[in-house]
Length: 123
Length: 445
Image 1 (cartoon, rainbow over the protein chains, first blue to last red):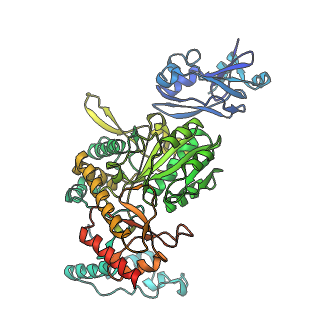
Image 2: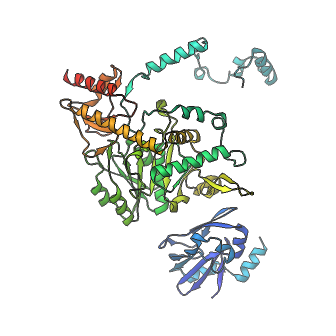
Image 3: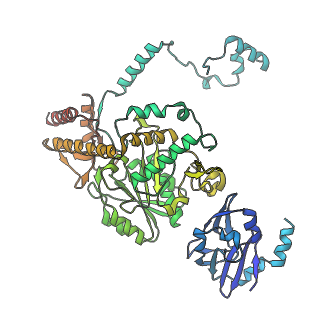
């Protein structure tokens, strides 16, 4: 399975119909110590690039946008008490939520890891 | 600080700099009909004359009238400590006293205020205060929209009608709606409220004691709201909480109210303060400022504004509220009031209100043709039914120096005979007896 990235620094990984969503390691590093993740409600429907969740760090409060459309089926409950998990493992255990029902074709408008790395260089 | 106006010499200098010949010439572009003809100011007065003048004005405005008026704002005793401590320069002159490095006193007072509000309401988290009771109810309604992501708020019609109007005003334009649910007699129609909660309902708003003075148990309503994924908002009268079960105990999600009754004078309508408190899990949805306790770099206890990512200087249009201030001084008075009384004193105050109101209730309902409309228990306020229209009777008693209560006709069409009477601890037995005698005389003649 491969990760795809948005220009707003979210990542998504498709596993069949289910997409796991998080923020990139670059984003977690830029935000600094993360103090709170505002998880979406289970059952919330989003279109690609809609606001999905929120994240607060000691430096900033930001929105997390949906890299793909779909319905939220699971959230990472561990983040409620240990939001620092996003700093420790942004693209692993620090995932935000899982979305179902997205259209794989939407991945076409995202970047793969290599393209994202290139994109970061240009920032 | 000098309050002297510009001297003629200074005015001449300024005119010379800007090249105007006279003040008249300076203002010439403003059409004559738009300019003040005369400010009609009386000659100056000495301090003594001014005091006498203001006292006469106060008397003419009804300051000497004995009030049995409540309906949201209450005439309570204010211990001298409240005026004395709240007017200390450290508190009184501070503006936006939020920088922790120079405002530990104010921040600590607000933190203790928040603790006091939580203890009074039985909730877990309070902000540092809002503008007044009405806007607090509205902020609670908005909070429920954010938490539930739904867009309908049920408003019990026995909630203060002015507060309901503010809620409706706030909801207008947010593609959310406030739906009123008629009261039953002088109480909330619990069955109808419960039946009205559906999957679109963000919250149910009730008031305890309500606008008619009735006290009710909203525990079952809270359970029903939660079952449907909605919240329960209880607006309450803090002094009553010394005696009746608080919103927290009934399972409410948000408790709000007007804090005026805690150490703030009537003052013809303000300034007062509003309070809002909630469950810990909803703290990030609170509007306004929140003070938190922390430690400094040497491990010493200190206070700071906290959870600021909710606020508009960070979240801009996505902030929980456009409130970025609070009513520090009025809230401080509330804190000093509560601290002066202590837990026991607060309970005694509430009991005194209840006892005096019960005495008045029996004295007034003993008058021929007068009945008490509340089927429910009451605190320090109750609704009477008079034999005829209430408003003219109130007018008549005013001439004898007594404000008998608030006629309900203005707020509840069809209740022309109803009068809400309030009896705080400040009303003496003599005053209550005088009200009864005057009312009897007015009704019998």
